[in-house]
Length: 315
Image (cartoon, rainbow, N blue to C red; front, side):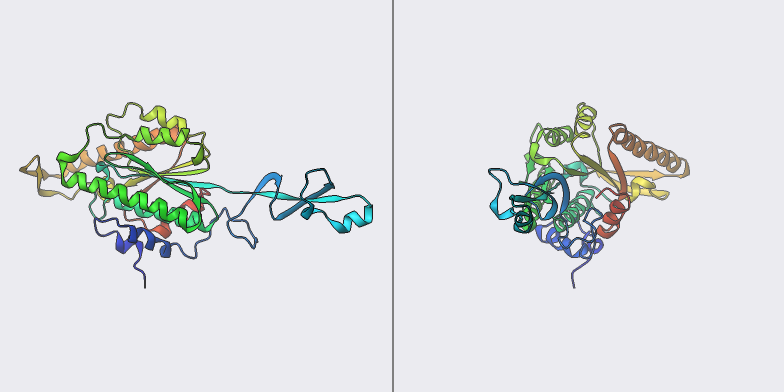
């Protein structure tokens, strides 16, 4: 029996094997974009005439037409050659942009980076089962890595390898601060790749906490990706970002020094208001850019996540 996504998220690790195992969490889920009643799950109906499988129309044979598509019955009745036209199948690309910068390595029950990776994997497996090409764009502590859009299991596995490698790079940098590079990539850099890369048109899902401190290009880059097909932002929030810690005394370490914080009722009220304002500001920035936004906690399971997207008609 494969472990559920929720149980795999209790740790702080994000391995390639755990990403691969996510496919078992989404088995049986059917994409709302699959063709109803089709014997070919996942194929999209295009508007162009081409070499598809769905019969569209007949027209007189023209030089250059594929002779294999001549309708011999109609040709015999009319004494003129006729060609069968088919509706061209439309192959979509699903791209997941996964934020694995060190700022995502926090959480009370599950690291936001771990949640982002597993939910991205669930999206990729579901998209692949619908016949989409799959790709990932991963921003980590030192680079932005991209997988080539491909169909089938090969496309998903390559995308998952990029996610797992990005997680490892950021983990290593957190464990060894001296190795961090000076000019780390920012979210706006990843947005620019989405808006300019012709291979990533289609459906784009961004999984991030959207922490953009110091990124002065963030809003401009965000606006540039809205016209690139359907873009959906998933704002990952930890439980303590929804509600502050209970009142009490807490010890913590910062800069090598041990400190103590006391949270009383007044402090808790102030923290609650600040968290609410901070989360609303993030969501407003995304909404103002014309991007569909879903706020979820890191404890959300793959089934809950995909079901919510399907209910909203976003996948």
